[in-house]
Image 1 (cartoon, rainbow, N blue to C red):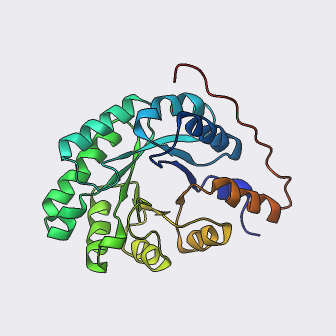
Image 2 (tube, rainbow, N blue to C red):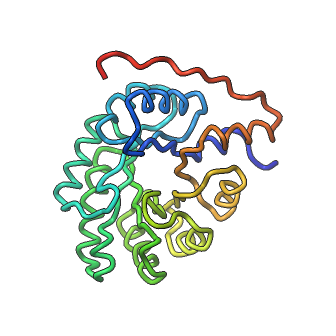
Length: 241
C-alpha cells in the first residue's frame, strides 16, 4: 500500500458539531482524536478553548466553525467569531461562505466576507477552510468560488457543512481541485464514512476530510496495514467544564 497510518489519520478532521452532543461527548471525542492522531478536531465554538487545552502538544489541531451552518451571519459577526476562536486557541477555522449572496451573484460581497475571516486568521498565523455548501450551487458558482478563494489565499476549499441536503461528491471534488490553485488545498465533508471513500478522495488530491466515523475509518486502516487495533478508553470529563 502506498500510504502509512499517519498519512491517513492526519487527513481526518474529527467532527464534533452535532447540536445534541454533550460535554462528555466533546471530552471523549477530543481524547479519541489524540489517540488516533487525527489532523484536527472541529468542535462547537463554545468548547474550543477546552478542546485546545486537551490537544496541546498532541500534534492534533484545534479547529471550529464560523458562520455555521448557513453562512448568513453578518460579516462583522463572522469576524468577531474568528477573533474569539483565535483567542480560544483555534488553529484552523472552517467558515461558511454567504450562500445567499453566492446565489444572488453578489461576488464583491462574497469576496469581502471571506476576506474578513482570512485576514484575521492569517494575521494570527492560523488557517481558514472556506465551506461552499455545494448541494445548493451550480458548477459555475462553485468554479467562481474556487477562483475567489485562490485569489484570497484561502488555505482550503471545502465541499459542505454536513448539514445541507447533500455532502461531498467525487465530481465536485474533481471540479474543485481542477479550478483551485495548487497552493489551496481541498477538503471533503459530508458522507465520508469509510476508508475506501477516503482513499478515493486522496487519489483526487484531497488533503483533508471531515468525519465523525474517525475510529471506524482508522480501525480499518490499521487492519489493512497489519497494525494492532487502537486501544482507547475515555477519561471522565474534568469538573468545571
